[in-house]
Amino acid sequence: MMRFVTGGACQGKHAFVNGKFPQEMCITIREEQILENMSAGIDTILQLQKEIAEAELSGGQAIIIMNETGSGITPME
Image (cartoon, rainbow, N blue to C red):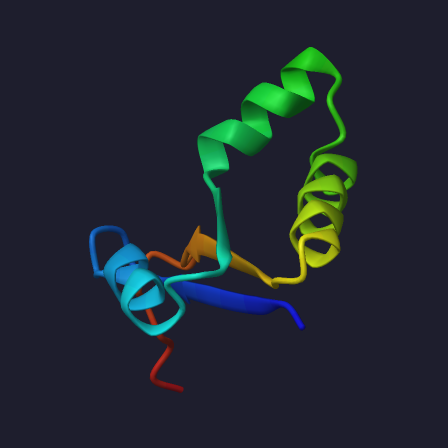
């Protein structure tokens, strides 16, 4: 099983994951990393799929952490 944790920057996502799932592989995706990969011609999705497969082969699960990209703004209407 794969889990996805998202939230604002510096909101304790890593502390939450490490506390709740200490044995699992944590994969952090940064927006900057995606842009760097695009510039270098690296397929971020394929890279992520490989990391998830490695976690599953070791008998664990991958937990993906990513910052919320909506800047915390929620439309009122």
